[in-house]
Length: 151
Image (tube, rainbow, N blue to C red; front, side, top):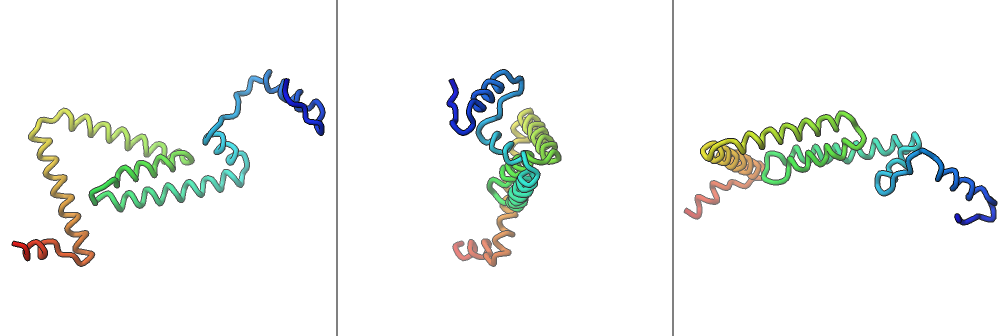
């Protein structure tokens, strides 16, 4: 039997019994339930949209800056889109498009022979090398001049 609060009398018992008979689904728990609680008010929904929008935008922008450099650039872009997709339908569609494109590229790459795979590897490493070289150049570090001193 549910706990009866002395201030509300039998109201808690009646509400619990009515909830048990209700055909409405139970409230979600965990993060989803917490987000639903925030979205239940107009102010909360707008605040959540702004916060998620800012966090996701910073992640996508940071990831796009990291893309030319060796590291997790694309991973951060996709993670930022996943964050944005929790609140924005356009981000969800873009994320799905990106996943389909990545899957198609991966399937194409798997079907290729060793010569194409090695060629793709060489082009990727060369592009990364050029990007790192010019990135260091903008910082005032000339890798070729440093290497020439050791030769």
